[in-house]
Length: 277
Image 1 (cartoon, rainbow, N blue to C red):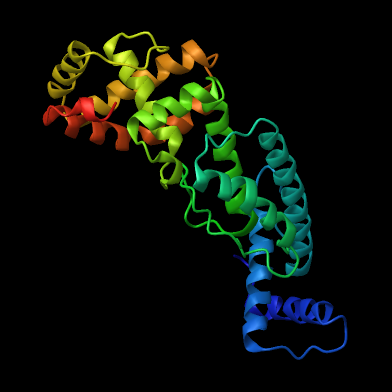
Image 2: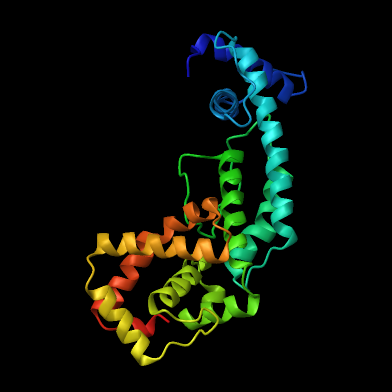
């Protein structure tokens, strides 16, 4: 942030006057702090978001940078809402309560109450359903935008198969998956990876004992780092075969490799793979 405090305080004062509808500039310390955070967030949005930024002149005044930042926030909020609406056209929660409550019930409340003018830094929601990748530094619309993009990739991945098939795979992993706070995309991906490792028809959910044994022996021979690389290659096969080589989806799913490789390695080393799927 290249602006000094003496350039930012007058912006907060103007914002306070707008906030009180011109009746007073006297506000609590907490509200002044909130408005200062709003100003900083707005300027940062204008400077840092390449896709939405309109700032080209590095000599802009703090006030002008703030105004442009607010415009960026408004546009990003509208864009994120339109993206969310597109996702919801074919949205399926697969009866997972956490996913449904967060996406179908929670996110509309964000768009209903989000205030990009006076409190753009407020994420409002806790986003209980865990996605595969998360920027913990982001807040407000930046966090929600990232989150909706993740949900978009997950729905694209899961919607390739029938809801019944996905639900059966999830239930095979955990009969109580409907109330679990787990990323169902990661669980289903692990199922597909096991199919590829076993050379098994992906439409057949059941593994026989020989297939479990073959997978266990294969995984036992690999150290964790080598297994990770193997799983990345398997994801590449899945993406090429079933998703028209969608590289964005491949990149997103690759965030699950660490967790999946550890789960499979522990299970195989303990000859317990049959209890995963």
